[in-house]
Amino acid sequence: MKKDILLAEFEKYLSIAKTANLNNVGSPFQSTRFYSIAHGTEFESALSKYAIELDVNNYRIKDTTLGEALRQAALDGVLDTLSNVVHFLKTDSHIERQRIDTAVMNKISADKIRKTCEEINRESNENQIAMVSLIGIAIQWTIFYKAKISGYEKEDKEIRFEGLIDDVLKNKYYEDNQVNKFLHDYKTNFRKKSYDGIRHSQSYVPDMTQVNDDMRLLIFLLEKTF
Image (cartoon, rainbow, N blue to C red; front, side, top):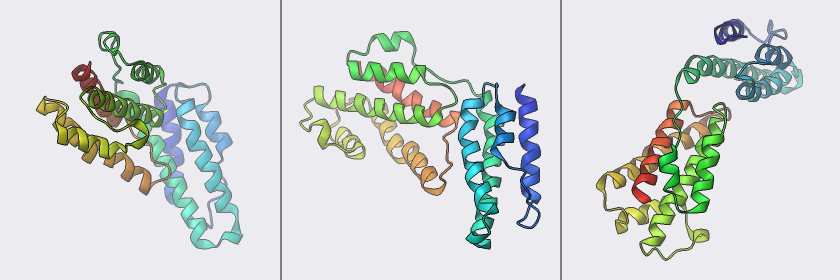
């Protein structure tokens, strides 16, 4: 199924969700139908988690013992899930993903960092959560590597990421002021955006724009570190 047809199907389900209430909801949000729409498309893996969310909320909608408030919250959850699917299909699939090129990869002398970067490049486009997590790990190990070769005395088991960034900025392990600005922005903006999203929504998924923003910082750090 082509993406435009897939998008049209989910937009139809979203319009149903917007008009539904607990008295007429019926069963239009079954994950079996969801799976049948996405099956065999390039988006099947990325959309599977949304199907699980629909299953949970559909069960809660039908469970009259939960009370009206919880059932309504489940119906609202259906609306949120379908809105996220439509947003995903309209945006992320159009954004070209950034990867670490061979020239940068070949300069990485630390095995742990290089292997993590290789894993990032292999990760599927649909798994943005894994990509952001791996990029964060690679950024942390790159900063830690730079700190250690510059005289940093703490061991890896003793550090917190925010504390490590603070120490790197305080001790000026990177002489390039642009690197220090990027690190400050990463701590106060990029990471905060992820944490705020996760805290306010269990179904939060970073979009490809955020993945690429984090990736650009990682590539920049790799170029300035190795």
